[in-house]
Amino acid sequence: MPQTTDFAITGGGIVGLATALDLQSRHPTARITLLEKEPRPALHQTGRNSGVIHAGVYYAPGSLKARFCALGVQASHDFCAEHGIPTQNCGKLIVATNEAELTRMATLESRARANGIKIERLSAKEAQTLEPNISSTGALLSPTTGIVDFGLVAQKMAEIFTSRGGDILLNTRVTGGNEAPQSVTLHTGQGTLSAGKAVFCAGLHADRLARSFGADIAFRIIPFRGDYFAIKNQPDDLVQHLIYPVPDPERPFLGVHLTRKMNGGFTVGPSAVLAGAREGYGKFNLNAADLASALTYPGFWKLLAKNAASAVDELSASLLKSLYLKKVQKYCPRITLDDLAPYKSGVRAQAVAENGKIIDDFLFAQTRHSLHVCNAPSPAATSAIPIGRYIADQLLDAG
Image (tube, rainbow, N blue to C red; front, side):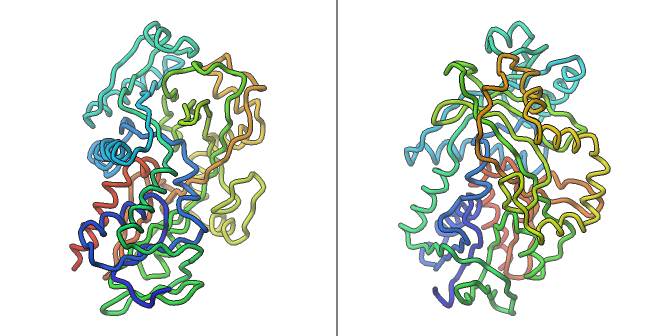
């Protein structure tokens, strides 16, 4: 392990890797060191998401999400085309199944247009013609939504970074550190590293590392596990598009969607329930410190109080596959209980404010020589390249 580096990046997910590449392109002679606690990069949120290249339909106009996603769609496709990573531009159908959802769909259409996103409203008949196996009372078509394996994207980023002289230290967990007037010291299980500048893309552990380095933050990461199922017994042409329900504004997440996969087949998911551990991908995975962190945080209980009905519904569906199925059958009634096969779960790192409000946009915090990525939920994978550029801008502008 080196004793010094110019730039230290903690976290080998897609955002950390994109940041490393951006810094490397600006300072090709600088020593840049990326520290990853796992045996290989992208094992957590990057490697366990839906694999969707989001168009940016849902995000508030003017938000960082809207801005970075708009840039990230083209940047993601360009990167994949340059490096031979397959993508599919299959498009997304956002389907309404009742009159109330049609009203919400109109609001969503207005938001998409305000963001400059290509969007087309379809009648029930038009949607049925496009997707015969999907039932709806109307739909929105987002033709620029696509899919990719973000794990492969991250792997290629890591290969490029190391081929250009960057260092990736695997199995190296950052346990703490401090800032001096001219540098940042990082303590790890493998030794101590001194850096001129540091970036922390710690995902599920973002709040802990931010606090340990003196960043002024007022949130806590609450881990939400998302359960998926693979679809079996169905034809290869079950659907041609990604199928999403119209989101309920009273609920904090987008709902269970039907997703095409790059290697063939389909998944449905995710649900959204409190995880028993920040990296607890199984229903019964528990970590006492992680669970206590959530349950002793007043913001969690305020969030729960605001979303009690949603929480009960999500928990019930997580425990009973028949209830999960009902969410899918709202728009795809031909899928049955026997069609739902086990599939890997994910855990979303969600920043929650002290007042119980979900922090819905990307969030960053800076100290004198460090920048912390505090909240980077979806569409962070789609937006990774412009996020990396933004991080480099902020870090270097700080002097």
